[in-house]
Length: 147
Image (cartoon, rainbow, N blue to C red; front, side):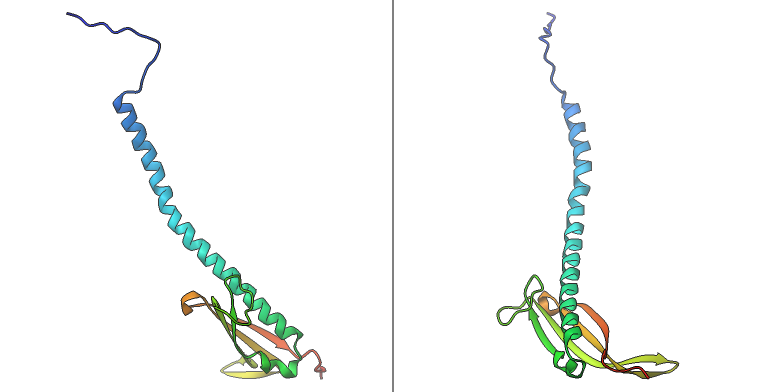
């Protein structure tokens, strides 16, 4: 007895076609999932760099508007929140340690002090107290007259 099938105008996918389609989709999706962890770590590093820059600019601006003779008052530790805004009190996410040192320039094998200038060093600690940035700036005495 011979079976005959009627063609009703509808046609379904065969099992082999479905398996091949799933294989193609899985080979294209799996690498995208792997990129997710890379993009998250890059996002975290970019955020920390941006916050470190914000903290450094805050300290630098404070140094630029301060009187040069009172520049040592900037030295010390400051606390910042998760956005890089200074905290009076409360739980700090970031810490900045500021030091003010005499500015020097390398002249051959020795360092020579630059008269009328100071070096501002800002070390920024992130969550977990790891160092995320150390930045330097030279601040000169605007009131000192040139020889």
